[in-house]
Image (cartoon, rainbow over all chains, first blue to last red; front, top):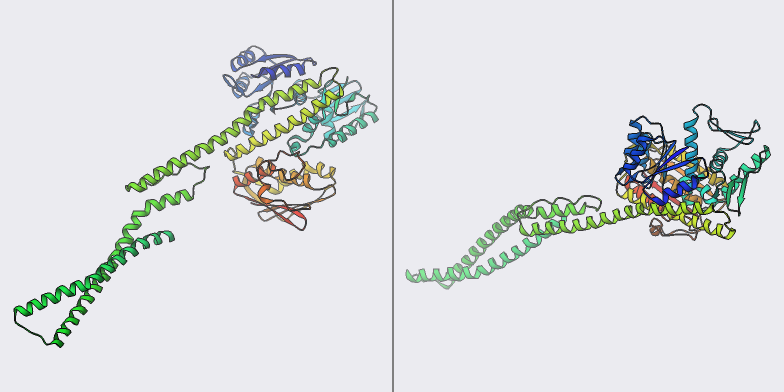
Length: 224
Length: 349
């Protein structure tokens, strides 16, 4: 699967590519407005990570150009601007998602994963891992045909792990994921532990193997 | 206008006192000249008066002169007051108009246009005022822009650092000690990002970058916030008493109002001991968030940026400043008081 990273900060672009490298993704780069326009003109991508502020122009224009050409590439805006108007504008003209910098690479990976899923399957959208099946549309989790009742938070967590398989995710990143902006005022990660513990227990009770490893008591890894 | 009459009265009083003295002094002079003339005329026509008649004449002259003087004095004063009132009002008008403009001015607005005047002193005053205000406005703007730009510029290095730690965590052979160091770096980074985000939000509110004309219902927003925060209430075993007497439907910025409610509620959660009670009361144009506590907090420091009131340092130190700025933007008022072992935050819409 092809991903275009439109980002003028070389460090950021490289790290994103490095983090995604384990997956079957092929990353290409564009460091400025012209380069990005050239690339989207010639190729098509499964997912484009688009920075808004670029040397030579704004990412919003690239997005407009893309939609004008009727291209169906998935677009995730990654912006340091974090302005609500930018987000709304971007989504209005056809971005699929918006992620404000700074973000965790695990969060970005989850968004890419979910975007590519959405684009690939329109009707049924099922992720299978060994005996585990996740129905993204119905938000159902099955182990060997048997439904595992999960809360919404546990479902989100499971998806987060699955889309970051074989990666170490720290508790702090999960806390951010689970509480979003509300994490602002809390420094207590106990609730992360509680949610992960429940998820693990439910999956094991349903007969799913122990793929979720704890790393030094403060990180997690979904090993497949 | 009270000041105005005082100022005018003062100048008028001096004029009147001076005229009174001059006129009073003129009475003996008039008397002397008139009696001299009188005596001269009498001598010329060889008339001699008896001492009684002479004294009578003297009294007559003094009486007439005094009466005339008083009459003219009265006329003079009446005229002076009239003229003074009329011309001074006109004369001082540019001054008071400038004063009024400065009184209504605050730094977030544009420099007021002072009324042009043909009086050199007032023109000079206006010019200097204009310069002073311009300088203050520029400094204020620069400071605001600086906060916003600095926060923006910090986002990218923070993003790079966060991602580096993400990558670091993936390294094979990371020892437990190293892992925990990376985790601590992570937490510090998350905190810096939050402070940065909140500073940016504050700068944006101050720079007036939000639309305040959305129709919102506080009851609905409150319901949403309570639902999202449910988990945190449960985690700390805090019981919530939500009391809605009436809805508040109002024109405001929806996102910011959400931030305001969340900040107030999260603040309450953070500072309520486990097993405590939080009470939320919504009545006519008024929201109260009450939580149990031991000691009153200093209301002067409470809303100040980065003034930490407790040892717990998880917060960005900006939550309540943001609440206050959001209120200021909408023309609402937020107040704190401590009553019956309860911290009470009140928002008057």
